[in-house]
Length: 483
Image (cartoon, rainbow, N blue to C red; front, side, top):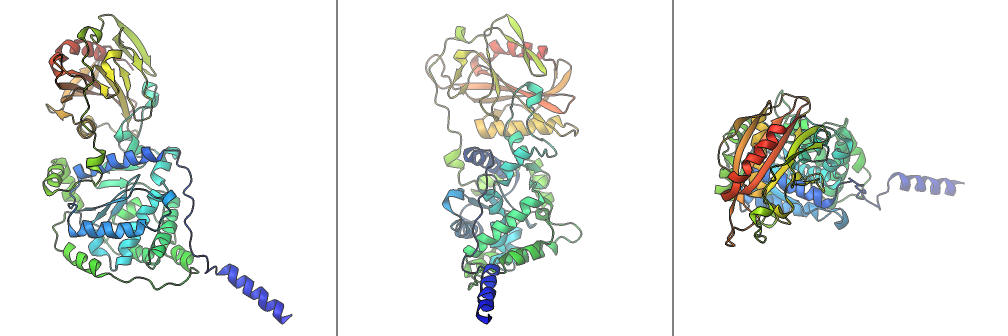
């Protein structure tokens, strides 16, 4: 009997303390958004970060160290669940870090200087990587959790799922505002990120309880106002206790201490000029960070490889094959009606990031639309529409994605009773001139507000040398617009 009781006690102890197994990575599940789409969104958002925030160049000691530490953490993740993580450092004094869909990650220099130990810094990085691992931003699109400001797509307004980087990112909870980049996670997201983050730390050789230590550090910062990290990452409740409970029975290890590199870089970081969130917001309004970063050699690792390459010219087309007909026909697009040239068909977008295209068949190539109109929309969440801010964001996105250059500041324009904004831009046409040479293109951006909180925007395109012949048709289309 004593022997049986001893065997039962041993079995219970083994089940209660599975020290031989150790922690395992969970299945992240299905986000119903392709990995390619998540990666694309993350890279586009990263490009906006470099326009709106100051960053350290790739060869800085802080960036090099953060990348080495990041790769050490990435190496623990099973290849089938991993992402092409990238690591960058933002010159911001406050404690914060954020990872974008698909892997781009940014760590404030204030986080490096505030970390008491390397394991704490590794902890916050592992936590952020876990949001990417679990695909939390992509899953927010499933939940349709509309966020403030520009809040997604206006498919119901124009009868199709349309939008651009602004709408796509807002639907995934990624916003750009006065406090920089803001990501909104649920408490359940935070619980999962804490859990996966401790697994990453443990497998990388760090004490997983350092993640709880980091959150204690955060709670003592900022006086009455909590750090931005805590605003974006709500406490799921009993955070420290939950982490302690999760790691309690994991097999013991000799955990890594502070490396000489960490101590050296933290000391160096304390002497680097950094900026407050308020200073960064003021600099963004003045448009200074894009030039600042370019001057210092700070740019996303993938920028060169993933930048939109110059469009290879297609074969020249005859003007007669693309000129708009004088006969206009009314076309219903959901709750919007617009007149179009009879010989310019409507093409609906093939994906959620596309545009509705009204263009002649001969004016469209695999490299882009060279003649015609593109239509899309963004929606606000019942808040007052600031047309200047929305137009500015769209101009920045056209600059980034298409290499378009604004030729004037946004001007007011009356669009059939709606007070919108107009900006003339310039880029490279996908079509060569008659003599086979590359030619410039005019891109006329017009943004139009709607009373329901949507902003419909148009991009009218034609080669610069021929734009005047097409503009009357574009003006007629705007004049016919009705909601």
